[in-house]
Image (cartoon, rainbow, N blue to C red; front, side, top):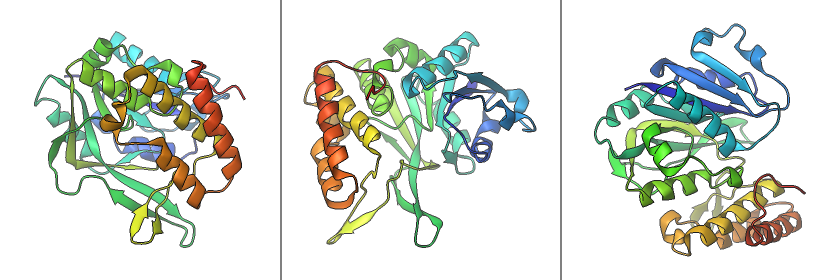
Amino acid sequence: MKFCGVVVWYNPATDVLDNINSYITEIEKLYIIDNSKYSHINLLADYKYQNKCKYIPLHKNLGLAYTLNVGCKKAIKDRFDYILTMDQDSMFEPTAVSKLKVAAQKDERYGIICPNVKSIYHDEKTNLDKVAYLKWKKEEFKEISWTMTSGSLTSLKAYTDVGGFDDDLFIAHIDIDFCIRLKQNNWKILMVGPAVIKQRFGNSKPVRILWKKVHPSFANPVRTYYLFRNQKYLEMKYGKEIHKFIGVDLWKFFVKITLFEKQKLKKYLMMLQGYRDAKANRMGKYKG
């Protein structure tokens, strides 16, 4: 089996190379697709794994789905079997990727082999990074319905079979849509418990309400637009049973915004705009 990776850059900081270091020794090639307006190839000038990297600038933000498709199509052309899809701010714990690679040999119908997720947030009071949660605490292996894009070791055979990522989504729910199509085409998703990835979910951080800990997104208004538009789009695409599939309801976002977040009015208006655009099939990049 041949393993490669793709990472999407958008106005990256210098620490992106530290994140890449957590997985680049486990893959043969890394496609760096830069969604930024300006080139960041200078970041690779003195990088010790520069020979493994293929830098591809797009010179504008064409969306996460489009960018991932660029990397996957390059990987297929170069005859790789699996591609590790990464966000620029994601970092694996030691040996995680090697565990994913071993698990890939368990069943050829695994469309994705994914890691356990450790959610990280920045505590403004202590100025330190802290752990919000570890998603799976006991399971060594678990077949699941869907997983996030970052950290997913994806079969390029499965990718081709389901038609790749949906460019219309731009950002948000790209992973959900892709995983639904995997399931529809009889591909499976395996979560490997001991393989852990550290992931920041935007500005999300835990807060307490009575005895319960919840995780508002604290997303900006435009991100809120994408969340609402794309989920409504998927509800129309796949039907109401999508709620059973992903366990995410938009009313929960509304409640968390109302109770905990700022810019409430702007976000309410963006929710409404997202809903209207989905109904009118106005997809792609937000044009407001």
